[in-house]
Amino acid sequence: MGKNNALRDKIESKLLSDECPLDARKQFWALSDGTAESEVLSRDCSAEGMADETLLGKILATNVHTCQIVDTYSTPVKVSTDLERSGVWLHSAFINHGCLPTVHRVVGDQFIIIRAARDLESGDELLDSYCELLRTRSERNAGIVHIFYIE
Image (cartoon, rainbow, N blue to C red; front, side, top):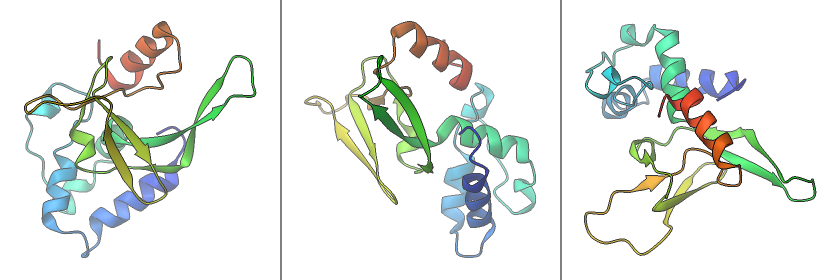
């Protein structure tokens, strides 16, 4: 998520508002915070249970989808993240990482599209690459370990 505090504030205010359905709050707090324990925890989704800013930050760091900016005019090609077009989409946040992804995400201003990267059979796991595929393998591995705690 980087320095995108505006996104954090926006998500926090949405989760605390009466307009946010309880089911959506439960789905958000069920997201991983990057630890093995978070895969099995049941968290408090009440306003009182949201007071832990550290936990909120970890969930966002682990589940935010961002739009990449690719500068093909630079040598080597420069890939960066557009922090203004970042968000958490609950259903797509449950898609696991794969070095050989089966799906690809396209982030728009207010939406995300998940597209199959190849023909899928019934029962195939949906896997997305959590890092930019234009980076070298060693850069991708380092980023996955550092940001998502995946080895």
